[in-house]
Image (cartoon, rainbow over all chains, first blue to last red; front, side, top):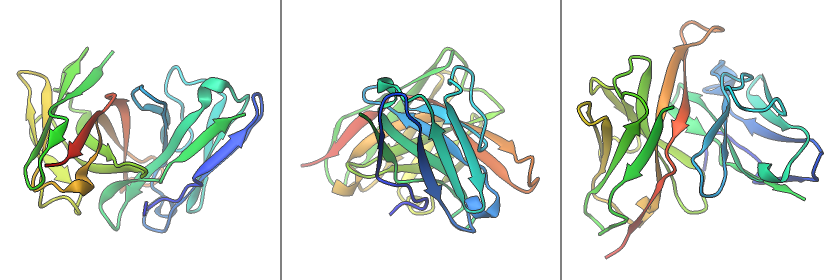
Length: 111
Length: 129
């Protein structure tokens, strides 16, 4: 059972927009800790997509954006492309556990 | 551009110690702004952070694994390592090494943020006799 809760799967057609939610608690996201997002594609190293809730590292297209409100966060992907298909994870810090924590991951399928 | 690569046995017997090494290339492990971490992904489950270490050897382990985990760093080789003792079938996973950037939150100065900005591709470890 992951500390942060994500939907197991989402899907969308090429060119469409999808969002992936990430729900935490008063010990992590709700406590004001930053949220970060990662993309895991088969046979490649995981990639940092978003850091500190809504910042993109160099090289990440602006099709990827994120937001945070209260104890929840969300990742939005616009203009879906086939190569976006993979697993997406949110991550934060939990003051109760004193540990870095992840969501359970969301599998994105591009139809 | 910093790259990380995990190495180590892909098969470990139950009750023995799992040992993995992460090699850093394209940069130095001596970086005051970064920690070095291990994260694993068990079959069908999400990611689990195991702990981190800095180039001086200061470490912090996940409380649930603290009794079994040891991390070390070798600055002469730009490598850091993971040892996980008394493994069971539950330790079967894809193990990633990664670089952690730590900073102080702008919103709450009492909070630090941690994110993994460089990852290795992972190495699979199976626990079986």
